[in-house]
Image 1 (tube, rainbow, N blue to C red):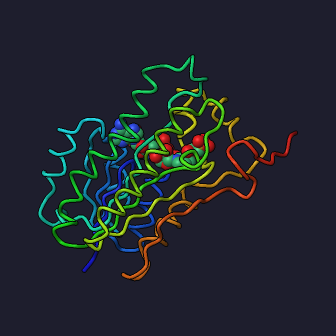
Image 2 (image 1 turned 135 degrees about the vertical axis):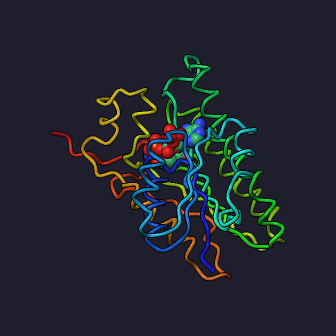
Length: 252
Ligand code: NDP
Ligand code: 8X3
């Protein structure tokens, strides 16, 4: 039977590339995000490849998360793969100067939002005793870098939640995977720097970052393994990146 994947943050970057790759491989897609017009464009783009349903909601709003998932039409109600990808960094400030609005956004989206979506979907996987959860963590969830403080904390939380899921869901035959990328050029830095395109571009200056498609390929590899294989976690870096702070750049 064709599997259905629900992908959060499918309007941009890693989530969008994953939706496209999953669709090319015939999976049915539930594409989520807040930007309705982008979801509609994606549904239109993928319609000739597979069955697509879109859900526009903010992962911060648990009532909306529950309502939207409950609204799925019958043929999309069974979710076999959950890709918890929605998230961003907001700001890059030392801890004593950080914005509380930015801190709330990162904790509410990257941590609580991932939990809300998971809580709404995992019970059906437990009942069926099958399913695969892919959490998108980060290199920032493995090491802390200057001014990364709360973003790193949110991704360390994703790492801990992933490990907790794997333990608690072990007896239900549910796979849990964490994909941890380093620098990926998406809208991520544009969001982090509040639309400042020059600052965002500078993050990737003089080096070749990962693309969203590079990450999507690893996600696809994880979901396409045989039933007895779980890719527990992957750390995926651009060749030019050794750690969060050691990046080889060609300076011009
Ligand atoms: P993008 O900014 O390109 O994509 C972020 C996605 O998250 C968008 O689709 C956005 O959709 C969605 N999103 C953000 N906030 C919310 C919200 N409140 N409710 C619902 N959806 C939301 O960034 P990336 O593709 O790079 O990021 C995807 C994931 O990858 C994130 O978890 C990020 O932390 C992680 N990551 C990114 C790295 C990078 O260098 N780019 C490296 C390591 C990890 P919309 O705005 O339509 O709601
Ligand atoms: C995104 C990668 O290094 O900008 O998680 O934090 S980094």
